[in-house]
Length: 249
Image (tube, rainbow, N blue to C red; front, side, top):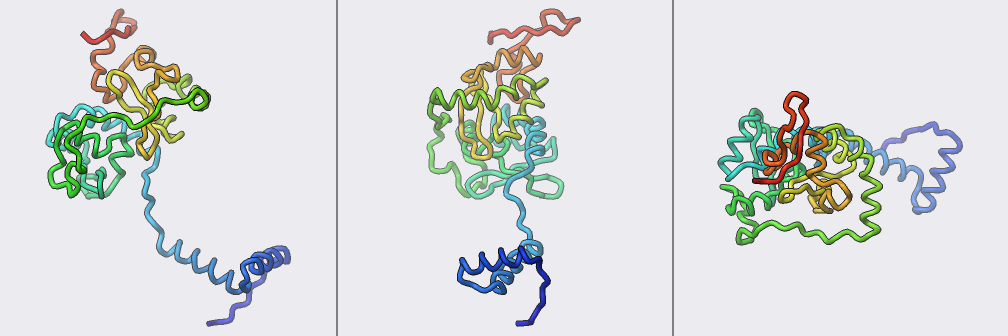
C-alpha cells in the first residue's frame, strides 16, 4: 500500500466522512473502492447490450419489408444478404450481423422480429440453431397481452397522441415511437404497438384512435414491410397523387 495525499474541499471532506461513518469504514477505504470501480470502468468498458435507437429505426425502415415478406429461412437470408446483413443464432434468439465483417449490429427482437416469430411463420427451426423450435410444435403466433384498462388506455393515448398527430410519414412515426421505447408491427391487416426491447404486445393502434387505414390514407402509402400494404391503397387522381384506402379484393 502506497501513501497518497489528496487535497479536498472542506465540504466534500465533511460529506465523505459522513458517508464513510455511515458505512463503518474509513475515508481511505471509501476512496479506494470508488477509485477502483472507476479505473475498472474506464480500462475495461462493457459493450452496450442494446443498439442505438436511431440505428434501430433506420434498420427497421430498411429491412422490415423483407423480414415481413420472407417465405422461409432461405428466402429471408437472401433478402437480408442483398442489404449486406445476415441473421445468426444468439442464445435462444437471433442477432443481426454485417455480412462483410461479421460485426454484431443488434438483436432480431429489437427490430420487431423475434426468433419465435420466424419459427411460427416458417413452421421450421433456423438451420443450425442450437435451440431448434424452442420446444414448440410450430404454433401459430398470438400476442400474450391483456386488454388495456381504461386508465392504461388513457395514459397511453396521452403519451402517444403527440407522436401520431405530428408524424409526417411512416419513417418519422417509427423513429418517434422508438424514442419512447415502442415499435410498430403488422398485426393481421392492422398495426400493433409493442414495447422495446422486450417485444411485448401492448395494443393495436386502433385502440388509441389511429387505425391502419387512416394512417395509410394520411401518409399516402402503406407501412413499409406490411404484408397487406399493396392491397390498401389506390390512386384516385393520379396527377394530384390523391390516395383512397380500399379493402382487400
